[in-house]
Image (cartoon, rainbow, N blue to C red; front, side, top):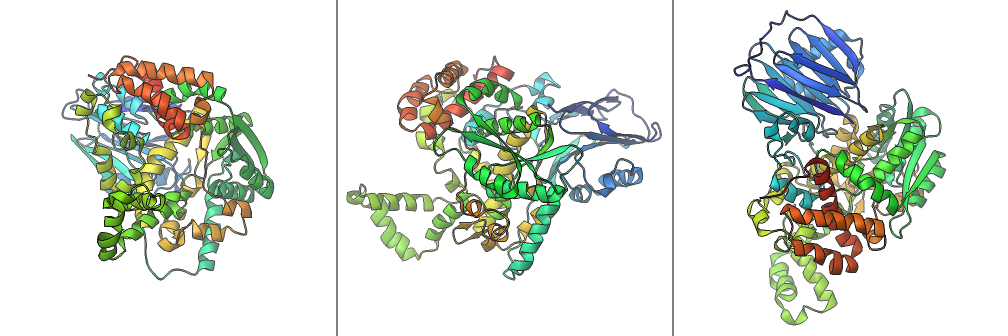
Length: 614
């Protein structure tokens, strides 16, 4: 696993001796995997497995970075490294904006009162963390790396536990630790003296000009950018690709073959469960591109063995159940000798591939109806007429109007299980009194409203860039590839491809109700027809279906929920209600909540076994 933890002492409080800029000569370490520094104001430890760091020092200025790309950052280009360090000191936003690739960067200048800059890339592929203490700034690659530096940073945050069960992850800027913060996409923390600020150097910008470029020219450019983005991920060693059978992963697999000039190595996961297995589409793509294809079928026994390991691997509770398939797929690739595997993550958030985008367009249409139809006909008939409530057509219309009247982004949470069941039925009153149930929606609304683009689709893409991609999908894949010991790359997140996609007309992303319209039309002659026309799926996990039938999973979940009863968070009687009537009637729907609760307890057992609220 990868770990970086350290601290930078504020000069006014530190008892460590200061140095001048001439006390140290140039030092350059181009490939660092283990490192420790105790250098007057700066102390840190570094231990990396699936990334390689570069350590550069001139005088009292130090730069630790990994993932930086481009001709300027070759190991032997010391003058360019020197110029970059100077740029970070003079104009940090511009210097960070110029970077390419999935990177994390730590810059420290110990002269003139002291300065520290800690930053992550535009997608927060790795979202580093920090904490402010009276005498120093503590930083780390993960929240756990930070918390272990000081006992004052190990207190858990009840609001984060609620947020986890609401989102299934804990979104930035918060973490499960009360005083540890996480960087969001395109963000950095800047400390000068004792002043610590969070700042942004980039966020998605959308061009909604009606003067669209010609479709043919745009399609040619997209194909060129896709191939260049995949080629940019190649490195020494064997490179493979995840292959779910969807448009994005199939495109990456095909482009990998083009970039290398030989059949790509592809890896897929299947499930022996109706409605969940997508292996046939992966096989279609593999045959179409002539890949060297590898498959693994996940079983309930695999889950029983791996759930505790996966829960413990994350620095905070993480409930995306697709993490398990990602781990097995990464291990399949690792066993085949792959040193780096490519994922298609990010394509949906660029080109409009999520079913939510079309669904919300349907609800948004309601607001465009004349007021006399909405207020004079639809709502009196559907919402207030008691005698028509149980007529099937009216019931559906009622549900439509009720959801359409909810403003975005709150409408995205219409089916959130906490809201559907009712938080008073789930949580103990003492726990509810200590948290703000409205905080998750307030956080979503604040980020949604930051997007100035008027088009609904672009505003949702902006929203998903953080909440779906950076907070959820990337930690899922990166965390599991780290656990498997294989590097991972995301060609869809290349800066050129992101800027190109964000400049497309919004109607090219979702045309009427057709998802990924421009992307699919461009790839129509490249991808198999079955994949162009298939419905969106992904690495879904049939946990609920397996849970009601598999004794080992039942024992694991029951033991976890029994232990969670004692932590003062969830009402003890709710567990019985969840496992009996709810799960038996709707295993896939309520199985999701059993999963998140079980993974929460497994995380507690691994990292905070004595935790109890109150």
